[in-house]
Amino acid sequence: MSVEEQHHNDQDLAITGVSRNEPAALQAQAPELPLSADPKRLQGQLEALLFASGDPLPLSDLARACEVSEADCRELLLQMAGRLEADESRGILLRRVRDRYCLISKPLYKDCVSRLFTARTAVRLSQAAYEVLACVAYNQPVTRAQVEAVRGVNSDAVISRLEELGYIFASGQLEAPGHPTLFSVTDRFLLECGLNSLDELPPMELLMYSSLQEFEQNLKQAESTGAEDPKLRQLPPEKD
Image (tube, rainbow, N blue to C red):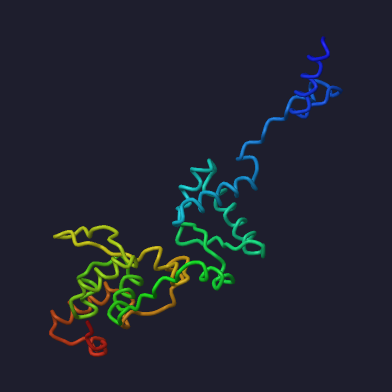
């Protein structure tokens, strides 16, 4: 071998980091572990998915993307949530909304974030909007007619406004003549109320009825018998 060839070989060995004195078996680079075998890297995958999405992602989608079971994915997310909350050097938290997950900034850094981003103008909701939101949140899915049965006034404009603001959405159709639209609250409603699910809503009997269905049954019974339901006398004044 010429001196020049020897020089080139030495350069190649230096670049690859392989020593001339190491046995051939040790010189072979160890194969990289698959992501599924490394919980930390799986959590990194989950964080990347949630960061790239921006919107809450369902557990099933996260598990499928990471090629793990939903049970394993839920456990990884639980570990990830604890790690992010405990690490003071991290500025984000993992939030669960229903069975969807998303990343949010820590409340501790609210002032810092607000200095960079223009705060969204707070939406002032009317009393009527709050009434409709309560009807939907505590009894979803509900139709316009069910909401109006409780409020006693037309609620089309209020429902349309809440849809426009992203607080409620058309979640289906009722299997009844005319197939009226059913409405439910959105993930945005839960996020802004600081709720993980509707199960965390404070106990409340809407207008002293446990459900809109009970209200309608009592109303129909009162109409058929001609007797006034004492609860109906205690309904609040009508508002637009």
